[in-house]
Image (cartoon, rainbow, N blue to C red; front, side, top):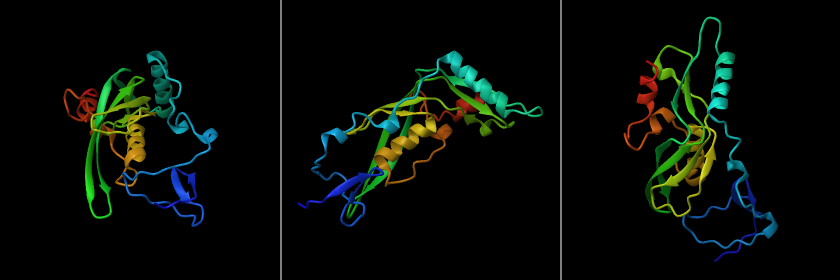
Length: 199
């Protein structure tokens, strides 16, 4: 056992004497003594913002489209899911240990808290983009002992926050949401729906 005087900063523990990040093997038991007044009951970085109902969400995207379009080029938009829709994404990572790498695959479920729209400034369906949509990563199908719900402002944000919270050291937290998210019933990425709805 080793006693270390540490400070928690930027989401990491730092040795106060050496001023270096404390590196601990994944799954190690640790004991922490903290001033009770400094403990938070929720993560201030993961709190939900005010949600928009269907009418306000449509007004928001219409205002965005009007601002984004030009006299020559009109920006089109489509609603592809309503609030309450469940979507899924997988994260595959390799947790590095001293001598081995443990492969992990987790399937996460999100719920849309607002209607989800796509918009397209160009003519090709594959050039579409998602409009921001608040959602919550609410479940993990794997045996994931420390899972907690995460609020996000978009599909990409949901994927990135999940990756950064649990797998930050084990891969890239970026993705293309069109190819990464899907409905459980089809198990096909939602790119197909997004492209077909534009025709």
